[in-house]
Amino acid sequence: MDATVNPQGLSILVVDDEPLALSQMTWLLGSEPQAGEVFTAPDARSAEQVLQRRRIDVVLLDIHMPGMSGLALARRLRDLPAAEPQDESGPQVIFVTADAHPAVEAFELEARDYLLKPVRAERLAEALRRASAARDAATQDRPEAVRVSVLQGDSTVLVNLHDIRWVQAHGDYARLHTQAGTYLLRSPLAELAEAWQEHGFIRTHRSSLVNVLHVQRVTRRQGRMLIEVPGAELEVSRRLMPQVRERLELGR
Image 1 (tube, rainbow, N blue to C red):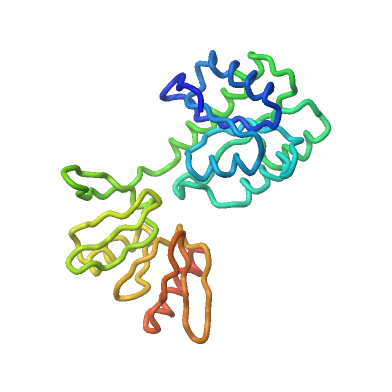
Image 2: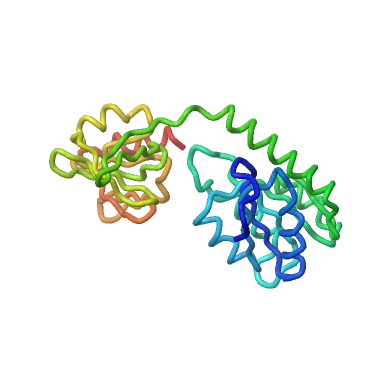
């Protein structure tokens, strides 16, 4: 990761198997006022790892790389759910390549732009302006996130409801499971089930709620219904199966 240029700028991931190309692009971004945090990856697999850990606005992506190509990675980014459920757009892809031939396929993959090497600073700035405008438009259209305050030691932490994958009954408390960790909220599960129903949470068991935004798979096995969310597989009680099935079908 390189130094942050602009805290309000675009978070950018540069993916290229050529070290010289990586360093040249990083150098260009170092003097680009629209760039914020800049990350680098030498191949598509490494890029996927960065995308799993970081919030990335723009991927500057080479096309021809050993292993998974840039086009294949862009296809995966288009087809997979966004890292943040409230951000349906996911990272924007700008292809950076010496080959003009795949341009048609690149735009079929909804690429924001297509830059030919060697990249000129003016052309890079234009592509980032387009990406920044698209990000700002998406932010304005996105409804304000609903947050809940929880205690963590001596601090109060604000957790977005969108980030909560599932909720577990914990006596008079509820344990909120997120990608960042778990938090205890002083509210019984029954109250949360009623209050959060409009935000996409469904009661799956007397001891659990699930956020439909994070449901990855539903399995029916020997009369049992199992819901998979990142990091957990939760059983649905027989009594609640019809309601859960109906909510998931509506969500689809």
